[in-house]
Image 1 (tube, rainbow, N blue to C red):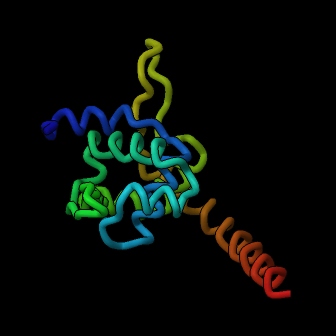
Image 2 (tube, rainbow, N blue to C red):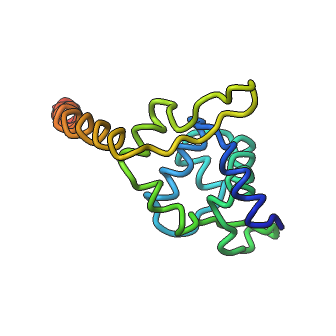
Length: 150
């Protein structure tokens, strides 16, 4: 069991990763505890990769072990997002930073990247960018849906 301090430290060094982002998005969409087996089916990643990233998220305190169940004689673990992280995970500005790999900046001494907290001006600039980008993204999605129907 890791302490809150260890989890906070691990969360600070957690780098954006496409597989982890997929896992968190799938967990958020699913809305209830989910197993690594199901996550691997949803994301298309291997079970080994998903299990590794879920353990990483667990160690950083982003997810918790919510329940266990028996499946064909084995114990299956089900994980859920930690409610404290939901605000950041659902924040579109944080999502944009994550998408662009801008949640952290390299440390001056060459160490692990350091998390960056936006000031009011930076947040306002990113919100303005999102407001301009949102209609374009929605148009592309609508056009994709129309092509899929045809």
